[in-house]
Structures are given as C-alpha cells and as structure tokens.
Image 1 (cartoon, rainbow, N blue to C red):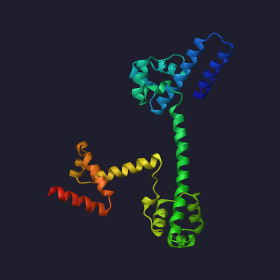
Image 2 (image 1 turned 30 degrees about the vertical axis):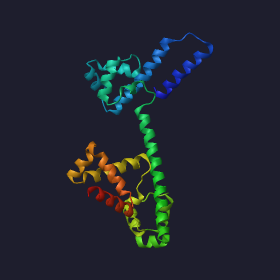
Image 3 (image 1 turned 180 degrees about the vertical axis):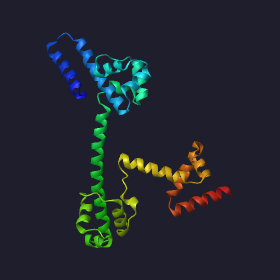
Image 4 (image 1 turned 135 degrees about the vertical axis):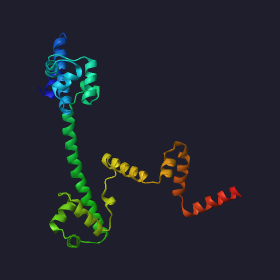
Length: 247
C-alpha cells in the first residue's frame, strides 16, 4: 500500500468523524497507524539495502514478524524500533514521520535538476558578460575557441550545458579564471567555498595552522583582519603610534 494513500485515508477518517461527532474508532486508528509504520519500516530497510532476514537476526526474532510489521498487521515496540533505527542508519523519529526516504530522494533529484538548469543559465550569462567586457563578438570567440557559432550561442543562452574543456578555453579568451564562474551564493556554493578554504588552511605551514586553530589566539587574528582592511596611510599612522609606545 502506498504511504500517501494510507496517510490520506487516516486523515479522511479523522475528518469524517469530526462533523458527526461519532465515537472515535480506536481500532481503525491503530490499524491505520500500523500500516503507516509498516511503510516507513520497509522504506528504511530497502534504503539501507538490508533484507528481512538481516533485521530478524539483529532483533533475534522470526522473519515472519518483520513481514507482519511491514504489512501493518502488527507493530514493534519502541526498543525494537530503536535497534532498527541504529541498524538501518536512520533517526528513530523517521518511524513517526510523514515522509519516506524514497520521497526525499525524488525531491532531491528534482531539485538537483533544477539547480543544474539554473547554473547553466547563470554560466551562460556570465560568459556573455565577460565577452562583452572584452568587446568580443560571438564570432570572435567561436573562431578563437574553434567552437561552432550556434553551439556557442546555445551555451550563452543556457539551453545547452557547456562542458569543462570548452568553458576553460572560453574563460581564457575572455580573460577570466575558472573561479569567476563558480557558484558562491547557494548552499552548494557555500559548501564548496568552505571546502576550498579548508584546503587553503591545510596547505599552511604547521605552525601557522596551530596558531590559527588555538582559540586563545582569536584576538590576534582579529587584529590582523583589522590591519588588512586599513589603508596604507592608516597603517603608517598605526605603526608610528606603536613605535612611540615602544620608545
């Protein structure tokens, strides 16, 4: 039974009861809740690539009992769910959520497709901007990059994804490095930027890394940041002031 169907039936049962003030049917409620829980258990098990027999061995029970849980005929206890959550690598709250892992995957795949289409358009616009800044025509870039003119037009329109070997050549022609085209504003861009910064940090000399990682040195780092933002004149004034103090 599909999870959405079970959830909608549960919701409809509650709505049908409310207007007429019927006596609440606990047995039906328990049955529907068991069905919903069964869908979530099966969803987590399949996502973790575990068999019913694997889960049964973990809990020391018969595989038939796991099957009855997944069909919603019976329900596990909370300790059993906790062990399953650990074994299937999901938070225990997954088993009383309203969304399956498979649904999340589909939504993420859709979001990724939308992200890539948006990035294609952004990169195309940036290519056009950089080309125009250099006062180059499409024909100029196409000739120098040996890329068909129509294909280059599609790249700039974002209707065709530009492969890296073409982008690197075009970037060189319009006098931009590859960092110019990187995403910086979205969650993905922020994560990539943080990874790049961590790489730069890892490449520092060991004593500099040790100094920067010590919380006691935060004050010195803040002073260095302040100095880096000062003009040459301000730095000279600050240096003169420090010399006067030292003398």
